[in-house]
Figure 1 (cartoon, rainbow, N blue to C red):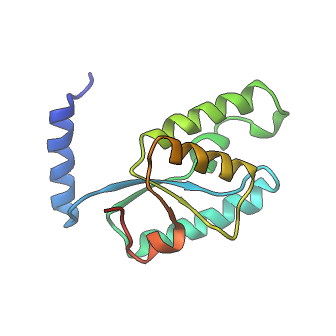
Figure 2 (cartoon, helix red, strand yellow; figure 1 turned 135 degrees about the vertical axis):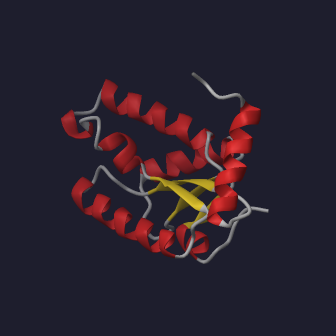
Length: 136
């Protein structure tokens, strides 16, 4: 059973009150993956923990865990990678913030960032996010 948008907003307000925050932000964390999946997954997990340590108003979505761990990304280029790519774009379009590390970019990160800009999702660095910056 799906919840109406009005009921969902009411439900989210209750969560925000319990967390003592004015808004819960859904954040897409973009980070390299395919060049070294194991290394980059460990790095983004550490970064996410650092961001979450002092920012209880964030829900972090990490594609390494949402898609790449579920699908066999390394099975060869083809339909699986395209499918993951489209799912990632759909996820980005539903987020409040797109965050990236300017020192760790890849073709995939740039592609995702361009899409976020196209659909007008605020873009910020992971450092800004960790330091409490939010879109206006």
